[in-house]
Length: 407
Image (cartoon, rainbow, N blue to C red; front, side, top):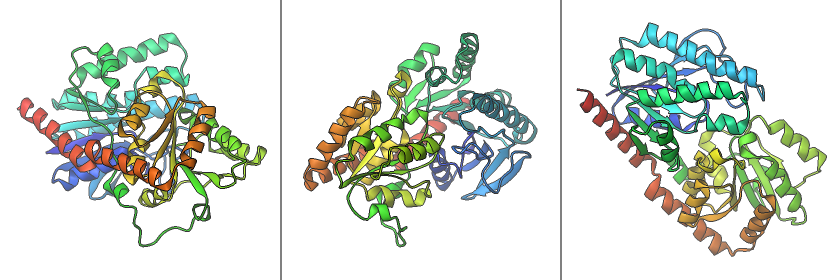
């Protein structure tokens, strides 16, 4: 098959679509990617790239078409809006001018926010008469209502209309979380929807490294590790509140890996509150993260207390399960349900640092064998439900069914 992947985000940005594209290619299919210039989560264009101009490069032998994009900035709704709109405009222009004669069999859209990034794919799909598959990671307009980036109800109604139109024009909708099915049916009752959970690359099942990084904070103590984006959605104030409550426990420390819009705030709070048990390590290459996570005594996951986030399953949950370490989760809804189903840790209500503190102490007081069993439970659940290679084969089968239906 010849597949066009449309995603505003792609390598070297760290998103699930990177592993999917590589695996689809390795199974013998032709893949090309239409994406923007990398600028997430720092909000500025990565070194080695520039905002203007169209370009091509290779990622593991896959052709990447990069279009100009306005950098998203940090906590700036106007820049973020320009970021979204610039991708729609330039991706549509490039698609119509350079990709129409490529004879694609499927257009596959990876869809974290912004949802409207699907517009270039929908336009190309209509003109080329090619099935468009959406892989929905965030619910719109609910997610932007929750973040309050946009509060104008008239504009939100317009976005809702566009969302309905995008759903209607798609051939198949894949959802990364089970509650998404009901939410999408509200906008498109006749849509074909399938549950297709996220996974992580199989490197997370093996944490062995021939050359390990030197990170002093990982050398001793009871290590609670948080890894991922540090933004408003993650309710990172909970990390600070937890560190404050744990100050009297000299052996427990919180170690944070990642970057994002709230990183500077966290640096400031660490200094103001003199948190000696709280460290910020920045971002590390994805290849090192399985080993880093494997050094934890517990892995921490947080999300804000919003209805949309309760329906969401962040990709980090699968990564945490895969490395086989017990999980502390401060979040509502589906993620908490999965942790309880897997019996791989403790889940407490979102943004409730008091309950998270109690769960942390409970985890700390468990015997080593008990924590190891929680970790094994998570890894087993991952292999049964989220194994990357199995999911990729399922995805290809979906594509093949659509291709045969088209013919």
